[in-house]
Image 1 (cartoon, one colour):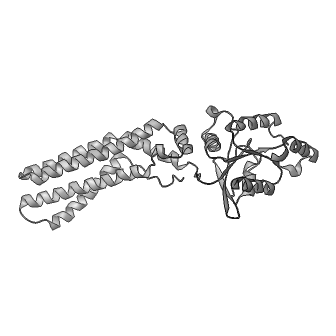
Image 2 (tube, rainbow, N blue to C red):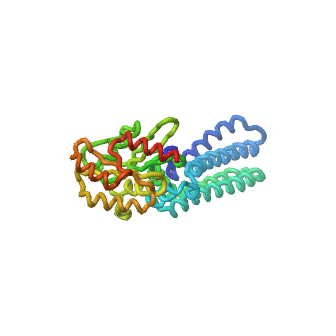
Length: 321
């Protein structure tokens, strides 16, 4: 799912000014086309203003509503991500406020167009237009805080990872700077940022393993992921991706122990609580003692892989089961 298309939410004053300018421009066109008595001409011009103001405001506000997805209709991963990164109730209330504003503007448009059409008093024509402008402006200004919150939410949601929900998915997990991102680049065509220091991964890196018409989504998850309430936003995304999206978890051990092996095993045990099939991959085996590697492989038996190619073959096999 991709949140890049969310419409930018402007300020209340921005929407009002855009609508007023459009109404003024429309009045100029209507003035040249109007005919009849002075009253008829005045009503024609003011009706054109009201109609244009309504059309422009409604269009922009509806773009917001249509752009934001139905939160309750999102896949579970994104629902939880919204709840983790945003105030869920405030987001729903803000969208509800915009919907209220659209309904209120529609009602005002109907009422004032009716009154303008029926009036036979020339002095009343301008008064009705001014009333309408004031009341519509008041409606839009009433939701200024909600518009600001929606723009903040849009910026947050724009940074959500684009994870495909109906594709077999592998999440790579393990401690920082242990080879997760390097493995992703070897399994897929992805070229993520790789550096020799911890916490290089600042987002969920996503690549695709392709083999004989099989397309597998592979996600590099940052952080240690062992205390959700203490995780940063990116680590929480990784946790939720494993919980809700992963069909298989590939856990990386580094026997060179940039982190104590006991800690790596503890995190492995933590991730087993997700009840997802797990494969173990040993990183940097080309520089490790062969006896150390052999002893570790013997303990974990068939689920340990030491080469990206053999791991990829097993992943493809699992995806077809």
